[in-house]
Amino acid sequence: MKYPPKNEQQEIVLSTSTPSRTYKEIGIIKVAAKSKTPLEDINQALLSKAREVGADAVINLQYSEVNAPGTYSNGPNGEVRVITRKNAQGIAVIFTDNK
Image 1 (cartoon, rainbow, N blue to C red):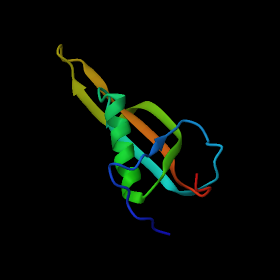
Image 2: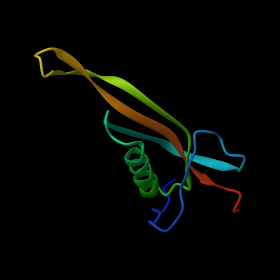
Image 3: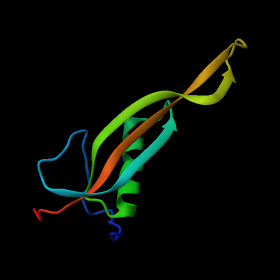
């Protein structure tokens, strides 16, 4: 089922836990960013994706930093360095209790 997108004025909750309110899952939202990306920017990307799918919240959020597969760069002294990426993932939901 599709839900209408949310506008910028409508609040969307980001949470690392499961809410006590009743809800219906819409789907998984994922964001990947460069390792130096501030958490605030990652959260803004999550909110943008949540708005697109009409979510009231993104719950059970998990943040991680991982080595990006096959991506290396030469350091200033010619050494090879692995490039890391920040990932965020959570479940987009619609609250069904009308609070």
